[in-house]
Length: 477
Image (cartoon, rainbow, N blue to C red; front, side, top):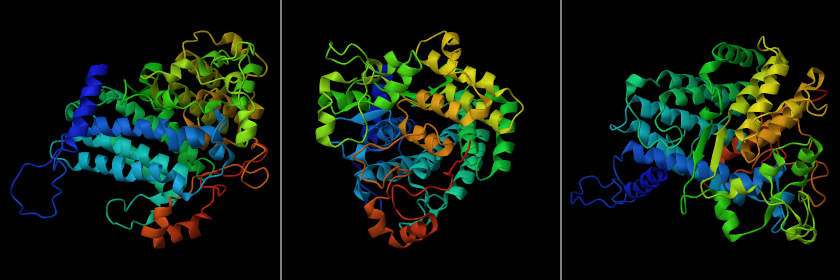
């Protein structure tokens, strides 16, 4: 399987860089350095790989959201952990999404070599990319993407509702009769799993709009719950990209091969220790200094001197399974589906027992990491479900289950209001405030200035602390 993945990625790279050998220059707009009609299989492999690197990598994850949700902390070069960042810091996230992923997915959709299943898969992935963009930045170009060099920004409200429709339409186009797909490194061409993934993404989005549009959320979630076996239904259905060896290796493995400036956050280690959580030994390593003798997290939001003074070898690095070359980037887990349905039950959107679903969700997360029996863990007062505090209970456990998935943990933390995080002592933001979005890249101000200014006027200042449309301030929940 690893050899197959490597071959697809290598061929994809070659396909996208091959020089045309034709000697006809009839059309001066044809790029001679690009394949005019590349094989969809190779493009799909490349898109999935680059999406996994974007989601699991530096700019979008371990140097921003993974710090801000306090799964990790910095012990060197601590600026992003102190929110001391600028508009230029997130250009890679924006450019990779638009210039690479969405552009290549459009090419797949328009290729005369693609069958209907290729086009539907491209639409599912397109929806995932736009969901990441709007959840990180807010209002972004969506409906006019690729139609203009200066596309208008759509409101987050319109984007999220549009993605619900896009995914429903994509799911309808996924059928065994619509042709085989090759080059699929997420589900190995299994159309039924793509349908499950599309439906699971709709569940995620429906909950995201629940505080703004409860009626639509309830309608969508009720229909999905009535056919819940058609969503991600166990851990074998999890949407994840399995990396291979260098240079297609996991970005965490790549980072720790040459640097050593990240540790597991004290917030996470302390919570897992408090709960006697068996995932602690999976998520973290014992410090290299054997005299410490226990898992020890690094404090978030310290300046460089204070962070260094904690001791490089006295703090826990991320768990070794996450630093393997072939460690997977998880996009969507079975545990998340169950947590989402538990929340829907707690909100009264579906007729189901929220506690049962919560227990199943926690169990699924433990099983994801090889821990078969969750009964003793769930029996603890600190873990046991409490209907009066459903957001707190689900919020904390879902945050734990999201370990490593910085962007989506960041979304759910803003959406649910839990866990209640505290900024570090050297935060660059006003007292008590934490980031709630990424800055737009500085190139948008210069190259798409008119629409950038309209977006800011609609959404609010281009600041880290500006709340997005879905991010409704929660009180007494």
